[in-house]
Image (cartoon, rainbow, N blue to C red; front, side, top):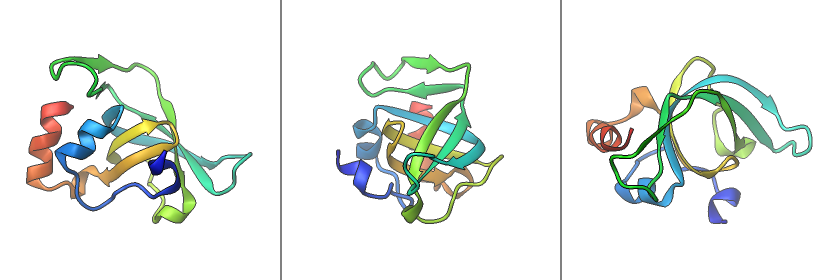
Length: 117
């Protein structure tokens, strides 16, 4: 998987980014910790109310009632802050295609995001 070895995109989110991801969500970071078996990754415990899966029709929103963990490589820039909301698009728990602070999302990206989440 290409996204595992590369850093997630933090600059501009496109519709293609959404369609490549297995899930897209607006998340809040609850906590962070180093993975004990792989020190070059940081695990983030995140919570979100719902997510979008591009394999399903666009009107299918999947509810989520418990937090999950998402891992990002330490080399990929600033660590995420707890209590802050981000937009994630991931292939799986440790392979995110994009991560962007929700406050930094442009109007065009917000229009795209609100279509999905």
